Image (tube, rainbow, N blue to C red; front, side, top):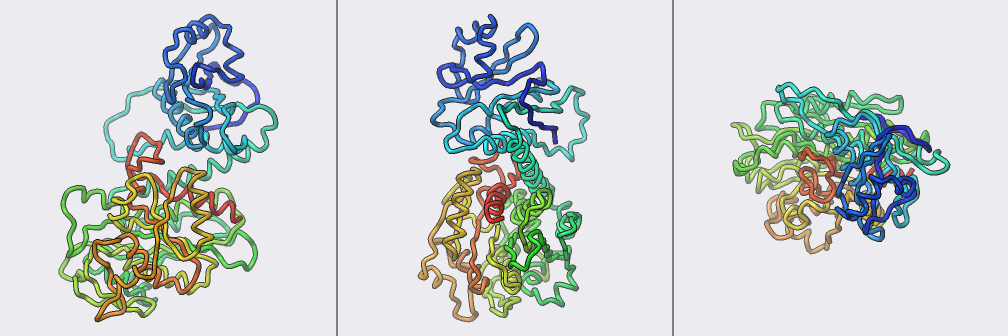
Length: 487
């Protein structure tokens, strides 16, 4: 991660100035307006402040990069985050080693200086994200961007605090992206367990159960899905006691399907490679824990991750099988590709057994959610209006957006089974909702929210500001804002 600092004075010979719609300058830009090169650029009216447009102007003793910010009244924190990402990418491409940026001068409705600095810093770090671990071609030697100085006017204390928060959140998001982007032959359940165990903090206790421990604990639904794979499952439990009190924790549960071929109900070959991303729910939980640890957030958390592959094999579970869960409820398996809810049943029941204050789960659960919401928003369902309302607000602030879907009682009828307690699919109609209804049977009345990130976990169109594509880290920024408000 590049070094980003806060300063109240000029630090570099390269400066980035915002240009508003109509070629209007902010305070810093006005200070160099009289320079003939700047005057000629403004007179030419080449981009007139169009959002994202960039142009370098060379002055006598410095280089100025103007970036269009568009119309002031339409400027949001996410647009500011996006501008910062574009700036970082441009500077890095042009071999600029360090630069000052004056984007904090932009006015964003209802946003403080701290809000703006956090959004900018997140954009700078996330905009430079790469995943090239497996590329063996030697890179062309060039100067890379090493440092950015965010120039602010006045007291820098709040800006420094916002920068620290942004660094932790970006670090957690990058961790989640890296986990999601790893191939399935690397990111196995064992690998996920090792990554969880490697998160070290005096207030964090992590338990990674192997297959023998899972069998002993009775996580039978997880074991059923694992039957078709030669690679052992893992059940990961993380306990973070940051509040130093006896308050019940907030439980975060993440689906950890490290590769999903669909089992006997095999998926089509096209784009099956993307099923390495089926563990992005667990990646979000791990990313959040990393960010919380780096911030030393004063809150109590419980993390639960069930992890396995879902493959075909002589021992694989089959359509028509009856599976008994950790809670004791029985599942009639109609489709082995509806496996995420099956393993989450054990994880949610275990989490509920620990008596948390609330539960939030993350899962790439249904293709139906992608059809409904595309890549612009995560599907939100649950039993707690308070949690859902707060998540909506955090989504609007972070642009890691959610959209609520109904869970009327009538939907529950679609998953009632005639020969078991519940079916693992309610059919094509309202597939996202009936999947959530399935999960609701295992939370035992604990306030609960479900985030279906199937459309947002990779190649997300609304939030992803990395040029790389792939895993987005969806859910990390969203829930970190939610947890910070709680703390």
